[in-house]
Length: 452
Image (tube, rainbow, N blue to C red; front, side, top):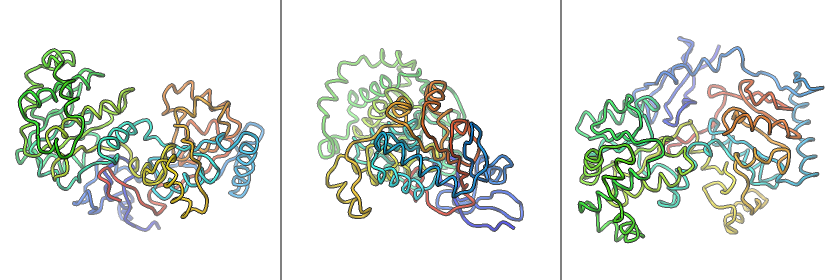
């Protein structure tokens, strides 16, 4: 009989405590650090369905004469070792690419990125590239770290919530019900920036229905209102920021009402939102993939960050910039180095001291040249990249231009897929390894507010 042990929900970045309830034969919540009353959303409540699913992969598969057939673990590992060794010997270490996973543990991702670097390449990436990598870049540039600046537990001290590019009522329901909603009932004002009306909008005091792609004009117009109406925290700006004069010069050229209309928003509503944010004693920003999943995603988030920097809403409870992560370990996968340009702890691969420090621990020095992103890598399959290890991702479906990516997979010399189900990417695999799910393994994940 299955036994019950405490784990973490495998879905979104909230990090709810979850366990197997043997009496009910299903998943149940426990009083975790985030879901303190043991509540689960419908996704978490259905998590056992994945564990007990009939279509799960249960044995290794290897391709023989064009067909995937069952094999032993030794046969599968021997094939992987032989083919990766051949590809690297023939084409060099950068001919291999590793897809890490935001759905897997810190420990698993750490070992995979270490394996890639032991092989001699920084060619490792994870699906944060397709969601919050732009947020990490923007926040790293402005704050020095690409993570939520505050904790969920201090949100109740905010006077204003600015939610943009996110729908927490439906996408992160435990955060919404347990943290945002109690604050709203106690008088916190919420501004929701979203092209559509949704469940989060229904709880908002001000809705700014921005046109898709016009986040920067809207945010710049809000910043211009803050400056125009004297809502800048001058002491904070003088002591903690740079570039204020240049920003003001740029904003002074804006016609605020025209920018609001260009963004599809009523100028009076935009001014009211900017005024509410600027006048708040403490204001917290929440941002999601509606902001980051653009060709200008980093610029979007940087424009957003201008608002808390102008008003001093950083460094205190109930303030800051708080990304709502999509998958359960998108934060941790980056933290442990499953990215092509940084080592564990976001130390650049180009930093001599960082590589030396890592070498002291690992016993070998990682390569100094940044690797390829997963998007860049798929464009080079069959050319510069000849072998791929796909761990807990399904790039044949999830990468941009999926039809082209599927064609690219066919050009690889060798491909390993390590997953729980026979995904679309398995079609292109030479070796398939069955993976473990949340109820079958130990390890840690890092949730959206940096709790491990």
